[in-house]
Image (cartoon, rainbow, N blue to C red; front, top):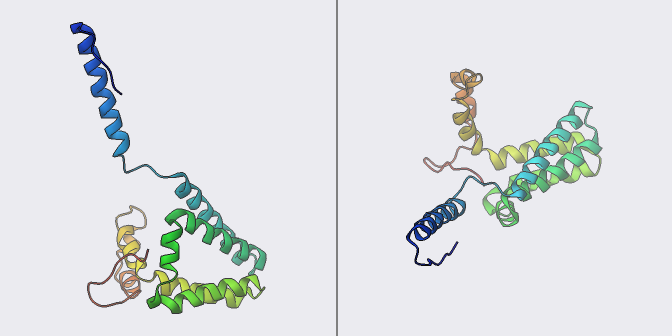
Amino acid sequence: CRFEVDGSAAVGHLLHIVQQSCSTATYTANNNNTMVSDNTKIGTGLMFLGFTFLFLGIFFLFDSTLLALGDILFLTGLTLTIGTSRTLRFFTRKDRIRGIVAFFGGVTLVLCRWPVVGMILQVYGLIYLFGQFFPIAAASLKDVPVVGSVFRHPSVEGFFSSFGRVAAGDRRAPV
């Protein structure tokens, strides 16, 4: 917003107020970090659909078609949610090669109609890849009103703290 003042004091004062409001609106729009991009929204929806199809595929006695559709939707949603470069960087880390091979081997077996073995490999790969994230998620769920008491139970805390054990102080989110 850019205005020129004519010389009239009232018009000049009014234009000054409008300029201030325009600059405030521009500042707020440029510094609003809570906005979510359309790709992230679509990716989250696709991940939800992927989890839904995976659940239905397991519920219907390892239906390979539903499981394959769930895998494809999950991977597409993950790519849209965190971005292509971060997805490639995550799935090409050499320190997690065992989990990557297990996960994609499981996806391949599900696509080749071996759903039970494929899902076992996928679960192992996901635990290996996202094991460091489970204690972080469990710690944040302790503050949720209904399920917080379950996550504060000593046996549940011990279970989630056993995931992703690495060198002391090196625990961070996997993505």
